[in-house]
Image (tube, rainbow, N blue to C red; front, side, top):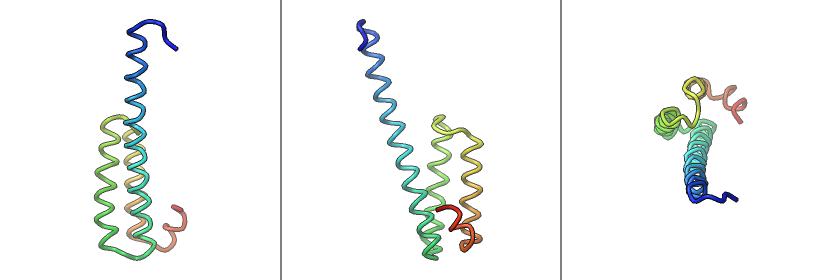
Length: 94
């Protein structure tokens, strides 16, 4: 445990930042799972709306350095391919 007042304050800030980042990551993962489930169930309209949500969340995560920009691009590419070829690719994703 930190001794100085400024170190205690910094510890609290780090914890708050960590919790915020975890919330964003969890939300991103849930959105991706929802999209993959829609693709597997052949719900194309729902999958298209979820894909735009996934894009938005991936871009936001890359913007705030939660994930790297290339990782976000790679995930977007792979997830968009799922919508085009749902049979073989959907089994790989899960």
